[in-house]
Amino acid sequence: MSPVIPIRTQSAGCDDQPVLRERGQREVFCGLTGIIWLHRKIQDAFFLVVGSRTCAHLIQSAAGVMIFAEPRFATAIIDERDLAGLADANEELDRVVTRLLERRPDIRMLFLVGSCPSEVIKLDLSRAAQRLGARFSPNVRVLNYSGSGIETTFTQGEDACLASMVESMPVAQASAAPSLLVVGTLPDVVEDQFRRLFGEMGVGPVDFFPPRDSGGLAPIGPNTRILLAQPFLGETARLLEARGASRLAALFPFGEEGTTAWLKAAADAWGVSDERFEAAVGPSRERARRALARQREQLAGRSVFFFPDSQLELPLARFLSRELGMSLVEVGTPYLHRQHMAPELALLPQGTQLSEGQDVERQLDRCRTARPDIVVCGLGLANPLESEGMTTKWSIELVFTPVHGYEQAADLAELFSRPLLRRSKIAA
Ligand code: SF4
Image (cartoon, rainbow, N blue to C red; front, side):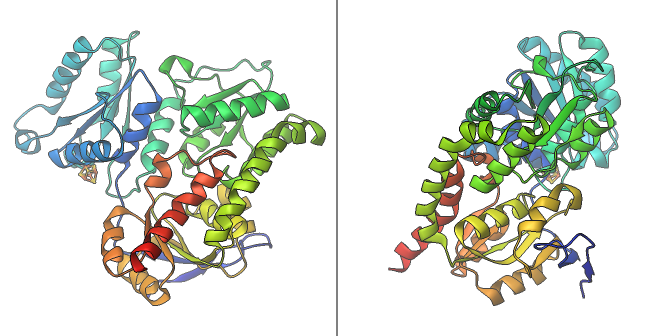
């Protein structure tokens, strides 16, 4: 039996509910998947996966399905000779990197991305990154992180990538004015919306991490305030805090409520008056409320079951229940970061079934018994559940699609209402 372990917290909402902790077979994508959105964000970066043909297929098929592929990622294939120890994998890697950088002088930041095979043959990519970094500096900065899927879930790839960059961020002067760093990959259009709102409130200077190009790494120091835009960046936040930055606790900016609370956390840290805050966010917030009211008509009273996958589950569950009137059957998350999730937990309805980790067969049994109106899960579970007559939403789509902020709040809701509408049309 999976143990039920109570978590200790304060009082309100769902934060004193027991959490079902499961440690069984898991159905998740690996951290290589993050390359798909990261390579679009950092325009002069290149991601070289050091992996097998399976890794290459994963990246290419994900990129091919989700976006127009651009040549800013590739796989250096570890073949049988490497696995058998017959070839010097370091020499081969150096040769591949040299050829790549000669052909592509536009690359300013190169990530060597580890995989299950590179870990199996114990290829030390951090030493390789140091060696190659020394050789190609100052034109190219070489970093490394692991996207291996053995013990991770797919959004951890972004956490590992951002964490690998923290050391390269310049030191902010102790006397520097307070600055805000928004942490987590956001589409440029969303970043621009937030930048405008912060500007109207008088909050700044504001930087975004990751930056749009490798030269835009923000300085970090004791006067840096960080605001997490994504809920899966535990290691990155820890490293930024170790550099002296302090984290502003807030809801994540999903839906009108989450976005308002997230912006308010920054406004409060800058001493912005309520009047100025209202003047800045009021029009966008009203637009979001009106657009969400239409979505609420479709979604209120419907039930949703989250399998653990993207680590967005808790903030999305809070949004779906509080702003759209959906009922939460189970909210699964791969990892529960209690500190970062405290504001979210406090707003989940009392009695929500939370689960952490996965024992996929048991969870499927619970889902089949509950027959929720919609199931949020990874691609591997979606097709079988659809074939059983259930309506699903791919969790990975929630990371690929612009969903943060006021202007995207209704689009986020529509990601849930559209499959339900499609299912009702098929049934009619
Ligand atoms: S799970 Fe491992 S082997 Fe499979 S694609 Fe990911 S890194 Fe490669």
